[in-house]
Every structure is written in structure tokens, then in C-alpha cells.
Length: 311
Image: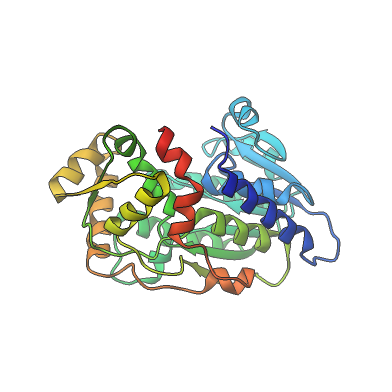
């Protein structure tokens, strides 16, 4: 499916902003892990007009069909040799890993980056690492990853987003088939963030000086509940949607069909923290880096309405 009109416009605007950044005119070589993913795909598009981008992906042919920007490079987190080839001579690297059951992936990328002479690593982590009561598997893994990065001696910057607005895409099938959203803790609130904002922050931090040793907390402009997200999506798709609140057992059963059991436990723990108000605080990291307010969920929903209508 092609990108929504609003998304394409946002990318063009962000590309103009990135080209306008003042980095002394230097053309950098920037490696992007997870380049086929939600954040990485947009980062490559933002950086490619001005810099040499190596887009790392396990499936180069599929990435090419999807229009991934930059030089598409085959690499696998489990294969240090492929990572070493991809990192060699790069000035900066965007580090995005997604499997807390495979801590070796992070180690492999960091070893390849250090051996390849990478100067600056920008790591996508999670805002929960700053919260002492967050002790789920995923958060502990991200804390350990941050420590791994600091221990390398390379320059680093940490991006700590709250939950991605795009997680609501999981509701697309039930919206399309039944006009229903099903979610746990319908009135809990989370200051979720537009992945496009994360991508634009990452592109700016990768390509301009002054960010080494910094950590940016990235959220949306306000906390919003699943029930309120359902209402915004109804406006975006142009028809009423019903909200059905899941019990913890129903949520557990649904997640077990998709994830291994340790991740299911982590998701339940994170959901309980959200229900207790632990994810509602708004941070200013997007504005610090980009000089503008973060994108509201209403805007994200409107820009992705086609996805929910056509799922």
C-alpha cells in the first residue's frame, strides 16, 4: 500500500528540514539498522538526499520492492561478518533492535561498529528505562543495552520514546471487519509518540553535531487512552467504531497467539503500569531537537485513515 498523502507530505517537509541543517556541508556515511522497520524506513528517506546511507536489512530484495532509500545492504543481527561489512567506514549508525530474547544481537552490532570505526551511535531505547518501577523483561533489556553502548567508549545518543502511535495498527483488522476496537484498560492513558517524530529526531541527531552524550525523552503532546484513540480513529475512517474493553485474561490469550510467553508477561506488566498512570507524563525531547511540538494522535490517525479502511 502506498503511503498516505499526509505521510508523504510530512516526509517532504522533514526532508527539507534535514537538508537545511547546518553540519558544515559534510556528506556523512550513515548506517541504519532495522532499515525496513517503522523508524528505520523513514530515517533512510530523510537522510538519503544529503548523505550516503547504508540501509541494513535481512531481505534486500523485499526492501527494494518497498522503495527503501539509500544503498540497501544485506545484514543480519545474528551474523557479525555481515554487520562488520555494513559498518566499515561509517561515520554514524542508528541502532534499532527489537528482540529482548536475543541480547547477542546488540552485542554483535556494537562489536561491528567499534571494529568498523563508527564514531557516533544513536540508539532507539525506551522511556521506561528511566522509571524505577518498570521492571518488565523489555525494559530491563533496554537498560542493559544502554549500558552496553556506554561501555564501548564510542560517542552515543539515546532516544527514549514512549509507546508508538502506530501500535494501534494492530486494531486495523477488527476495525475493517467489525468496526470494533478491542483493548486492555480502556481508560488508561499513555503519552504515545508519532514514529515519524522519532524518525525525524533520529535523522537530525545522526547528521548534526552537538548531541553526543545526550538522552532525549520522546512523547506525544498529550496522554490519550485506548477509548479516546478509538474515537479519533472513528473520525479518521468516517464511521462509528465500538470500543470493547478486554479482560487481562482475554488480552493474555490474544497475545499468546502472537508472542512467546516471556513477552506476553512483559506486555501484561507494561499494561498494568499504564493503568496505574505510569505512562501519562509528557516530555519535551521532540521540541528540544526539532524546535516544534510533537504530532498529536488525531493527526497521526487522520494521516493513516486509509490503512484502517482498507485493512
